[in-house]
Image 1 (cartoon, rainbow, N blue to C red):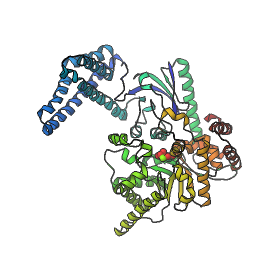
Image 2: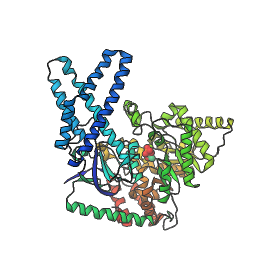
Image 3: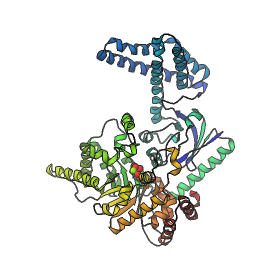
Image 4: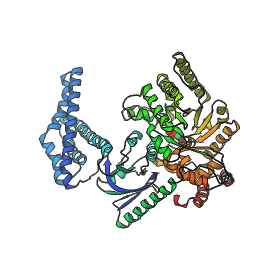
Length: 581
Ligand code: PEP
Ligand code: MG
């Protein structure tokens, strides 16, 4: 048995069998399969080789046509290796006699060959070692790729173990069978973590080398509440976690009963609890958890979930679907927040070229650099505005000029639509995310130019504290409880109040029970969070008074360290909802 501590990013306790995905550039650890699976594993190998052969033959033909036969022949060598009977026999023997996974068998045999070539005195042949590595990678890519695709069509329950998962890969996981996942890297508010929470899949990230320590077929416990992963648990651990699993399910049922009740304090203050979504079909689940509307629709997932850029029609259909499911409840459509950790797998090259992706060409900046793309989305939003309560929100605004430019593009769109006689609702509320310290500090100025603010604490924390939200190595420094972050939040809420505009928090902090009393006491009236978090937050609101929440906020704002803040909030919240701690 081995117990590993990481960062719990999505709550819940699950016990199941591991499937391990390897990253291409990692050493493939030794893993075994059950003897009866050797046939299927050999078949996977055969498929991977066939795929590589097709790919290489195509490449050879293209290169030959472009650069001549001599260069094209390089790939003849690759094809020769792939068709070499003795190599194939060695790999197959690893699988059928030593019961290694196909990945491990490929890497062992290919590395043996690479070593042999390195030692050759003939410089032509010793140079071929790079080609061998290339072939190994191509086969591993196919094998791992197949597994990633297989994840969408699982027949039994599994726990996914991976070096990393892209937000789009996480969103594509089969929720019915993927009971949980654990990764080597990642942080609490990475978009992968956010998607896991939204889908209700327990997850632990930032485990450093969990991919090397778990083998496919191992029994694994994921404890997303405590950030713990237990590999091959003993009988006692299994019993303890089964009991925990049961208790959490019971709590869930109990909280579910709050669904129809309003989020009102004991002394009569009502707040609005809304949900964050990535896809329109999440609306039903959000409403089921008691959401009064969608406070943040992360529309960039439209780009992440398909291979080609969405058309105006794709945008429109998604918004129309969300509105139809909402039956008149409000929908805050955030314009594209692409870039940083949100990119398509096929565009990962572009993302890597950003030297500092979170400070680079992301979000509203990217939209203002690509006006046709931005307009496509704005037109679709305005067309959908006649179907329900639509509100527009611009992300990552850092200067007034940026806001004014974005508004100008929107005005252009409205003029064009007017000329084309396309109906839209002119008076729709326009807001911005406050997630960059410069915007938080100038909230009073911004408040004069918009109808509402939504505080994006996920980014506000990383930009205020200079801590990458996706980096497990600095995750200990990433906290909403830092007094500097809290001061900014307090001041933004005050500026909104002074200027009589709406204000919400839509970062993960809004759904963390630990901060409910504080945010309530600071005067927040709208909270937008992952649907499953709503009942617990509602329970706290319904169990306290505004007077008490204000006392908590005053006290917290007098502290100068995050430790004091956390201790105090934990004490106060534990009194209301002990099961959460
Ligand atoms: C935020 O930054 O708090 C936010 C809600 O936006 P995202 O997590 O999509 O960056
Ligand atoms: Mg953000």
